[in-house]
Amino acid sequence: MKICIFGGGSIGGLLAVHLKNIGIDVSVVARGLHLESMKKKGITLINPVGKEETVVVNCTDDPNSLGAQDYLFLTIKSPALLPSLKNIKPLIGENTTIITCMNGIPHWYFHKLSNQYADYKIKCLDPDLLIDKIIPPNKIVGSVVYPACEIVEPGKIKHINGNRFSLGEPDGSESDRLKFISETLKKAGFRAPLQKNIRDEIWLKLIGNLSFNPISALTGATLEQICNDIGTEAIVREMMIEAKIIAEKLEAKINMSIEKRIDGARKVGAHKTSMLQDIEAGKPIEINSIIIAVKELGELTNSPTPYITTILNLTLQKAKLIGCL
Image (tube, rainbow, N blue to C red; front, side, top):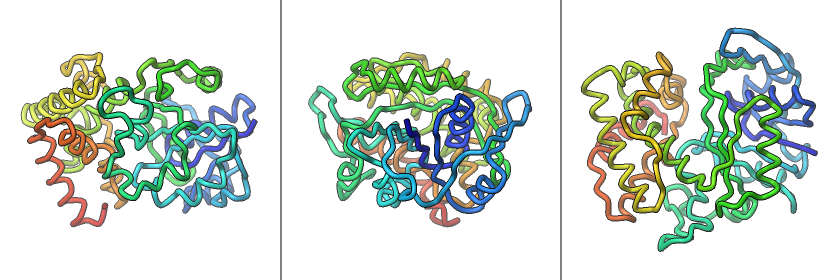
């Protein structure tokens, strides 16, 4: 069995170390200084209690050298998906299952959705309808990723907290491939619950990402700072309310109160969101899947989004000025 992790960043590295530790034939596609370090010295993972371990994993920037995989985890940031299609293609064979591990609304969201919006194509994510040609929707298993990690230096990843990868088929079935992925991740030390409606879980995480991420990018504040400030906490709450209305119109359920969702973020503490980390590193931010897509779905469902739109416009302006789009 061959498993490839496409995107050797913090989440990709976390997965690679844990899968390698249970004897899985795992490869990582990465690039840059991070790749060079991983190739020379292996991947070093610092666990939440500060213990370090280094694991040697096959890392490359040439997916053609790996060939078709049995299971392919996509752990890249969403802005990299379209530009990466040509490099993802050699990894996909007739029997490949693809697990999407990216933040926000996934491009396949409306695949096998049985309501009036079935098969709607999200324009801001795939304007030219290129993704489905390379990544067939019937090969996809959805995942919602909860670990908080960061790259502290090339080749070294810090796992801050969280170990859950929620999994679900787009049609809600409990397929053999879904069960296999879940059992494999459990053996590797993760929580990997099966979700009857993975879209519910997508929205549960997304209402946090779409509010905390851009506010942190604009202000430089950590999660606890945003939650403990009366002004920013109020904006978070309003953005979550707007998103919740959209989710419900799409027949998704957010099975947690907004108060509890905010409190959960507060408990994470002085953690910088991934968007703030990207801003500080001068990297493209995940704005399409996290915020623009939600605004598009608001228009689709005739749901006003004044707070989301305002924060989106401010974030776009900042990202343009510092070259992070």
